[in-house]
Structures are given as C-alpha cells and as structure tokens.
Image 1: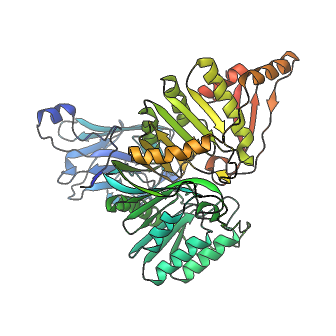
Image 2: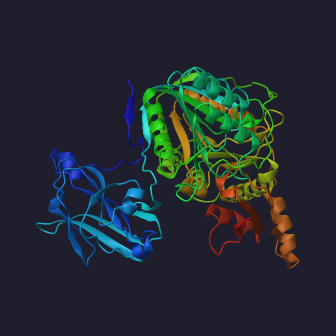
Amino acid sequence: MTVLLLATAGWPPAAALPAEAADSGVATTPTPQLTAAYPNPVFDGDDGEFVVLDVPAGVNLSAYELSDGEDTIELPATDRAGELALAANASAAELAGYDVLPVQTMLSLSNAGETIHLRRTNDSTVVDTLQYEDASEAVLQTPSGPKPVGQTTHRPATTGPANVTAFVLPDDSRPTVDALETADDRILLAGYTLTSTRIRELLLDATARGVAVRVLLDGAPVGGDSPAQVRALDELSAAGVDVRLIGGARARYAFHHAKYAVADDDAIVVTENWKASGTGGHGNRGWGMVVHDERFADALATVYRSDADWRGIQHWPAVREPASRDAGMPANDSYPRRFPARRFQVESATLAVTPDNAERVVLGFIGNATDSLRVQQVRLGDGTLQRALVDAAERGVSVELLLSGKWYVRDENQLLATCLNGYADRAGVPLTVRVVEPRSRFGKVHAKVAVADGDRVLLGSLNWNQYALDRNREVIVVADGDRVAEYYGRVFTADWRGGAWRIPWSVLVTVAGAVLGAGWVLRRWIQFEPDEETAAAARERGRVWVDDADAAGSAVRDGGRGAEHAFRVDREES
C-alpha cells in the first residue's frame, strides 16, 4: 500500500490541534489563520495592500476582525474557504495569484513594521498574530519570514514503500531514456538548460506518438542560450511541445535550477542538466533516481504546474533570442560502465523543494545521522549546511566530504579542505575533506548528493550553499533503504579513493607563520570562471585571504562570518 504524507517523518509537522485537545480527544472549532501580509506594493502610495487568511470550511468569517493596534476592520460574511486575500484594491492580490475577498477599508500597513491581530469580534480574543519588520517592496510578509510574491508553499511529500531505479553518470543513462521512451500519457521535463540531442529526440518522438510534452527551463542561464539550446527549443516548439521559461520581472526564483522529469507515473530526479555531459557518455559524475510511484510523480507534477502556470512565465518562441554560447561537446560514451543501474524497493521516498522546505529536510537528514555522513558536492558554501556538517562531526558522526577538482573550483575547494581538515585535526573530530581526482572514470564532479548511516540517500539539483537554499527552485529526493544506500555508497567509495589531494595542516601553518613573521599578511586571491551549475557562483569571482592559519579553521567552523575571524570569503559581481 502506498501512503502520501504531507510532512516528512522525523521533522516537525504543522500542528493542527492544541496538544491538550489532541490528548483529550475533545473536538475544537477550527479558526482562520493569518498566513501573509503585503504592506509594500509597487503601486503609488502603497495602494493595493492586503492581508491573507487561511479560512477553514464552514467558518463564519464575520465573527472576526483585524487590528493593528491603531485601526480595526470587521470582516465580511462569506461561505468561501481556503486562502483569501482581504483587499480594498484587488489589483496587487490578483497579480499575486490570490483569491480576493473585497473589503470596504483595509488596515494601513506600515513598511517599517507592524503587528497584525486576528480577533474574535464578540470578546476581542486574539486567535492569531502576524508580526513583521522592514518590509521590502513587492515582498510578502509571512509567519516564516519574507518571501517574494507568489512563492509557493509546498510541503515535503513522502511516499512508500516504493520501487526506485538508482543510477549514476556517466556509467548508465538508460533509466532516463527508458522512462521518456516508454511514456504514453505525459512528460513534464524541468531543468536549467536543455541542449542534449538525445533528450530532444526522445521528446520529439514522444510528441509524435501523442504524448503531452511540456518543457520548463530557466529564462536567463549564465552566458545566455547556446546554439544547441536555441535549436532544440525551436524544434520542440515547432512540433507542438509547450516550452516555457522562468524569468523576467515577475520571476519568483533567481534561477530555475531544478532537474527532473515526470513521465507518466515515473518521477526522474537527477543532479545533471539536460545536456550531453549530463545525459550519459560525456563526463559528469552525477547521480539520478527514478521513483516508480504514481503519487510521488503526481506530487512532482504539482510542483511543475505551480511553476509553469505562474502568470510571470515566458513562452518560447515569444522571448527567443539569438544564441550566445558555444554548442558544447557531444556525448561520446568514452567512460567505463562500472556501476550499472539497479532497481530497489525503498521504505520511503521524500520529495522536497527550495525555497519552500528543502533546507529543513536537508538539515534533518544531517541532524538525524548517528554514524556516518558521506557528502559529494561541486563546492560547499558557507551557511547552515556547512555548519551542520561540522556539528555532526563534533557529536561523533564520521563525516567525509568530497569536492570537485575541476579547474574553476579547485583552488577554492583545496583551501576549504585545508581549513576544515586543520580544524578537524586540532579539535579531534572525525571530519575529512578531499578534492576528487577522477582518474579517467569521469570528467568532473557535478553530483549534489549524500549518504547517511548507510541507509539513507539524498540527491538532486541542490548545490549546498545558502543562495541556492533561499533563492533558487531546486528539487531533491531522500530515499530510505539499506540496499539503495549501499549502491550509492559503493560509488562514493570509488570516487573517494580518487580524492587524494590534501596539504598537511602543519605545512600551511609553517608557511603562514613564516609570512606573518616577516610582517606580511598571507593573502591569496582565487579567480575562477563562473560555474553555471552553482547559482551562488554563477556571476561571482572569489576573493579569499587568510591572516592566520589557526584562526582559519575556527572561522570556517563558524561559517566564515564576523569581523573577529581571520578567514573570509568575499563575493563581488563580475
């Protein structure tokens, strides 16, 4: 039997009833909840302010009032339920995609901060409160913090038990091909870019046999659209494929960086872009998983529709622009197949997305580890996930972090490895960082993956940096099962054995001491080309300096923040 949960086991679900009511079994009357306020519209004079209530079915809304401590408005009677935007001028709320409930007057919401109370009219009892500070223009204020207008609020979705097909690239791309090749009803393909000849032909073939095919990509990839992408999107659009782009003034995300597809009742989640290097044969070390489960696929399709049907979407070819990048290398099947795809049954598979819920899920994945964490990333940014890995090591979890050795991140990753390894040596915690050497098994690391305790796996498009967590659309899957974790663990072990780069901490201390003793500050500049796969690094050049070797590890431990730290990473727009 398959069960779809709207909250991930192991992480706090949204409370539905007070604890005492749940324990006693006494039924309670549901009340409306304040879910958002919009105090700073783009219209002149902040015209169009609104407040959003989540109204349960059967609730008499006229029994409530809103107050900001200065003014009070009574709410109108309505038999409507769900999220309703209370507005005197409906324009902004409608643009934000809300169902509007008109009111004669609206509270005058302060841009500098406000506390809004929802009260019962008969006795002024406060049933909910929403407080915010310093409201930026065109930003919703919610109980969990500010968010762009129209940002989705998907919860993690867990299904299980379920069958999955585990695969890695460049070893075996057949699971993706098989799913797209055998689809009869629908294909929803989402990505950052699409240049793969193989994928384009599979989508065209599916369209020809009557499959409803839709494609959703980022509208402004770093460097612009390549000739291969322009050609692919032109051909797909001409064949009747619905091709849409996320971008423009109303874009909800800095980058649409997710990489997934829904093919009938199969959900494909991958770490790779839809291009030659990410679809088999030409080089990327990537991980992928096909979840063979109707309800999981439907949950992912819901994410797709919420993005593709947003009013700020751009349609190809209406926004078609000339190509500005090289076409890229073709797939050439030049790497060995050491790890063929395998099919397993997992106890559960959880879907999570950014910026809605994935940070909580990843932190839970790390925080629940008791024995080991094995993480492979292009690079590791400072922020909550870096600190969570160090915290795990400090509580005794064996943490192995494998980073890319590709030229555009090599220096940055080597310095981070030196700092974290030095901290681990001095603190006596089980944390080891390596920079991978592929040794002809693949071209570069592009995986964004982790294995915990040998029984849980996390993979998807999410680069582990705060920018991607907060501002991108990313999709990940967490699978719980010993056998699937063993499969990916073997891949990690093979790659880890190639990750031999490590400068002894004593060497760095000696060099730093000599330089400092001469009255100099050891300063290192690292310049690298933009990495289109890492949103935070996409338009940045890195500047890194170390004033004191011992302080460097401590600074990394604390996220690289604060004037008292000698280790910093500054980012500048290039």
